[in-house]
Length: 241
Image 1 (cartoon, helix red, strand yellow):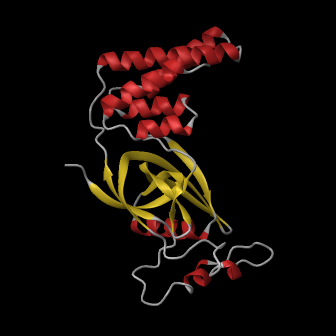
Image 2: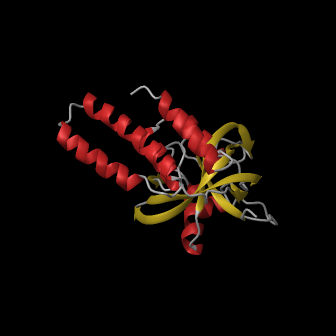
Image 3: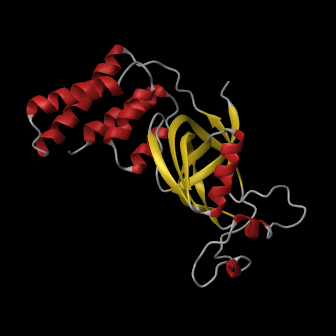
């Protein structure tokens, strides 16, 4: 049976792949609160692509599929937080929990933003939480179900991915006029490092070669590893490098 969990959500117009490492600067009060909660409880968050048509208490909501994110480094500089995180498990959202307060553009909140545009501190914002509220979270969260990715890649699948990745990297190297011997060594090292029998290899290849977030999102939404492989190889075959 698939595992069910509740995750805080980071909603952005980007896609995180399992195994992919990304970094962010966090300055919004709602996400500073979320980061505090994640660090205090040593828990992950969910990275989900924005769905501008899904509005939750005035905020843009998430699409249905996302990726669990584990924080690996955290640094504070003034009021900004810088985090590095790695993608873990894919998930499907079953229920979204709204933030307790609307955006600052809302009539009930707009007086909190002075003319200089400086964001208020977290304590000032939390004073607006209605008395008796069930929670005081400024960020979206969701009940999620993790998707199965336990299947190992067959030797055939690994060879297919390596050959495809070699071809793409060779074309890029040719465009950049990289010395052939240097390029061949780099490609061999890269493919051996990225591709093994783990299903995460497919997402590593996607993170390395696919820039379109819509294509990445389609991979996240696949039902199982077999479908991920079929979609990925189709995307890569259609690429015009």
